Length: 212
Length: 212
DNA sequence: AACCTGACTGACCAATTGGTCAGCTACCCC
DNA sequence: GGGGTAGCTGACCAATTGGTCAGTCAGGTT
Image (cartoon, rainbow over all chains, first blue to last red; front, side, top):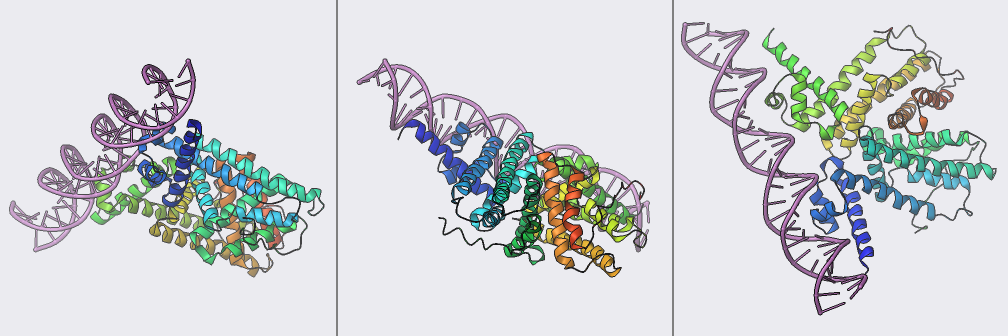
């Protein structure tokens, strides 16, 4: 293996380990040693690749979003499925569903909270939010272009959808008022569908097993 | 001053100081010394009144909710205003508006994040959530009883409202996509009003200055 | 007045933590 | 093949932190 490839591989291993540990333990209580052990390196290696703890964690959050984001974008043949199905699936991806999505959601929440005080976190959070917003707005716009959805302010609708997934997602994680994933899905769709001129029930998004 | 009153006063001072410092600095970075200094006592006094750091902070969050919650409940003569106004005002109270509301919102977010891992925080968060839900559901129910709102599932609607305020609130704090308080208010009302059979624009909630 | 108890302090400590540094090893280039 | 360098390690450190403890002091009780 070339030196560059090895470097990149180690960096990725560290970032992945950081994501896992942060999601499990929470930013606050994550220690460099935990990340180092999970990545199979020393803590000094962490400092070799990343200047400080804060910067490592911040890069980890961005890394998490980039990898899962590109997975999402690549996992569906866009020409095939109806746009309502695609939108419903995007909403699913924003909720803490299976283990991986739950992890992403937790990281997203951690970032959000840090963003309140730390300017670096804030710029990353804003960046990721803009990406997410564009992704969803793009799906809506496509659906409108295909005549499947009614016209509306796609940006506002994207904001609404993300607000709903964030809010309901937090509720699901809290386990309060017996809220389940299906409840959240239904509720969100009940709010979103009318704005698109849809009267259909929420499209069964199914599991991601088929998409691999 | 009696001994008991003095104790209670010191406890309250500590809890208030803790709330302030947590909201300013964030749970993670709050040190006992900061709270002690702000409260005008020694760190040993903190440990005298509260067993551990975690328990102190948890009690502080509950304290914050209890005090502001009772303020909210007491600040409006319930017989006077139309129920749509009361509901709009409740929604305002759930958003990070003025300094004080912003503080409460931040504490709420901190608690939410901790609740994911810490069982004690979770039970507090569930408790507070249930209170908030009941408060909002009660307002809706009153409005329905008065014939001002259409019938609907008040619990679900309360969940929806809180999800929206949480989601949009986080967005406002992030400063992403140029979202403002007024935008959030309008968007939330646009979603909520139809479910109550209302076609009115969001009632101008005004400032709380008049209510003292 | 003598005593006691609860509230609180100042000094202190054990443990932890992020970060540093000299040095080791494998690979690359000449 | 040998010098240089990137990647990485193990040992170490300075600083911080939550928590402890003996002791002080005020106020109430007898």
